[in-house]
Image (cartoon, one colour):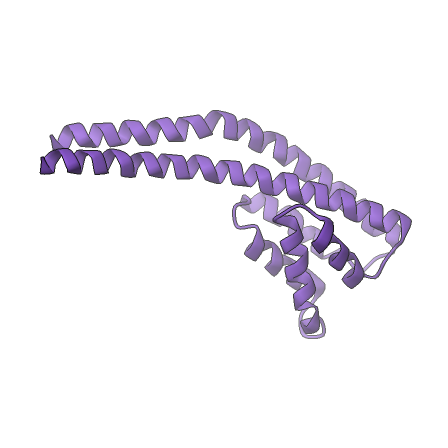
Length: 170
């Protein structure tokens, strides 16, 4: 009876690890989709109103889909440190804290955007937003394909590894 319980726990644990890996792939897709949408909103805001950066971040915090809105909110909350740190540093910290499921290359794309925001005229900022959004959308397509292929593979491998471990224990 105890061996059977151990086998069930091994299968369940390994299966859960596989499902967690698949969930991380899904969250990356959701985060990329949210940030691409938020950057599109930012482009529109800069095209029509050209608001100051704190006003832009405040608007995006409310209007952008989660977790992108939280990223802009976190950056907005750090604006009181703007004299000590650059906007690029605040932006990088906000991206790393609020979007942990992004791949390193995704975070690097967003970090480069932080170095442009607030430094150039409206047209330069819009171009940087459009370029970053295009890169994120390209990464999104790859992440969706990766999620579809590797997501099922991770879940299946987790269950298979658990079953193999259970067989070895029995």
